[in-house]
Amino acid sequence: MNSQSENQSENVTAGTELLGPEIWNLPNTITVSRLVLAIILFVIIYLEGWWKTSALLFIIAAATDFLDGYFARKYNQVTTLGRILDPFVDKFIICGAFIFLLERGPATGINAWFVLIIIGREMFITSLRGFLEQHGRDFSASWSGKIKMGVQCVAVILCLLSLSPESPFNTFGFFLLRDISIWSAAIITLYSGIDYVFRAARMLRQAPLK
Image 1 (cartoon, rainbow, N blue to C red):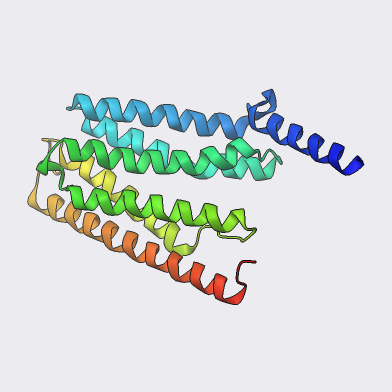
Image 2 (cartoon, rainbow, N blue to C red):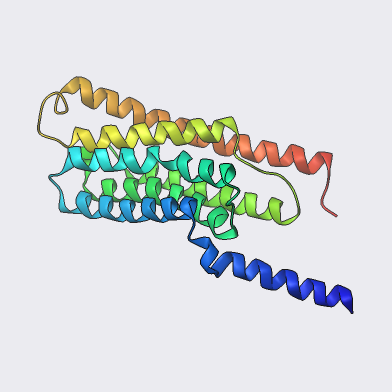
């Protein structure tokens, strides 16, 4: 009887942590601000003509990624909402930026296959991580995932700037640099996905699910 009451109490606490007023702490506020900034970025890309501004907004949204996690750990303000929202916003910013760049046409250097690789990898690894962590396995980000994020961010910035009619963004050399970053992002994204799959396989071989 006591055990049942304790379980009910734990469920209430978890629900409060996810939806209660305490979720509006500094880390979660930063995460939500990044989400709002991403939406503003997408609107500016859609309107066209503000390419340097778009690149600057993206840099701010991407560069502040570490702040929410840093403050959450430093001030012991880790919440369930934050653990869900932070990785979602990261993927929302990257995938959304590539989708809106794709809509701008071939001038961006982005094609549908590239976007499919980016989004497909994120969907699959997110599902894989959720499955493993549901069974109590630690499947946190690896070095390949962090490098992948960095290279993708560079590709987005160069793609945005390459749409500017001003020098040096409209030169052959800059377009070549942009294309190299795009191909690098595609390769490291595929490699990172394969690396995570092998990592999950090793984990399951060493300790099979019961």
